[in-house]
Length: 418
Image (cartoon, rainbow, N blue to C red; front, side, top):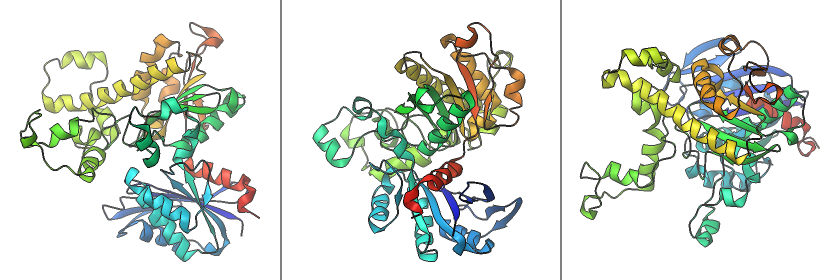
């Protein structure tokens, strides 16, 4: 047995890649709409609609398509929240229970990962199931950044601190940008934007995570398709009270359970409630992004404005972190990197954010390169040599691959092959 299976479970999706130990990609499978059937099952270039009810049945259907699953030696599972785990672990009962205990802190992902892990342990007991934690990349964040200003005895007892997520993506991006720039990862300072339905930013200093926008849970920081991102903590009480307005009258309060608050902020917020869609490409299409379009609709109605509001709000929150991380890195930034589904596909968002970052010394975006990224894992979309020559900070796009990052790490880790 020498094959590596990499499973990336989302809240309603499952992405699977099969590699050999040389980390050559052999096949891929992508299953979407699992929680809103029929699920879309894409396998090696073909797509079909199937009545798959959950992640376990989706994974079982994938296994049925493989000729001989017994050849799989290792199964790599992306797990969003690993608590204080700083490295990958073979999943035993203790590790499984630890991940399950953290599910409330990553409700959109850990539960889905556990379903696939359980299916693997039951149907492929001879293969090693290995958990790769998104939070592990951020264990280098200094204590004064990861700590919250609350009673530290309670915080330490309950593990209440900033953990950070999207770590597999950031690890892949750091390694890929280092190869692109022909420099060791430990020499790089980067501001990385992982922008998708779940979005975050990360400041990387000397090849290590210095700070990131997500916190105790993936809810904090940037808004997402259904997440609010960072909001005033008291907002949820005024949002749900019986008065229908802002009030501190105790008689107007409702018995707000934490599960209800998290449901509102995790699943009933973001640009879906602003616009009615989770598709950011649709928002970009309808938003008035250029100056002329905005001037022509000075008196636009709310129905027209909602698309522009969602776009502008996302850009604003991104700029908050770009500016803050630029300062934290002492302006010694090698590149601003766009990644994730939106970061890699939305030329409009890249253009707007990069244009606003010009005042910090980042390269002007080349319209042609930005419109057509071409081949390669990392693409430089900046116009080089304008203004500050070689000292000008680069603007890059990186096509991230969390499955490949897990498979590569697994192939190189002798713990899993002895």
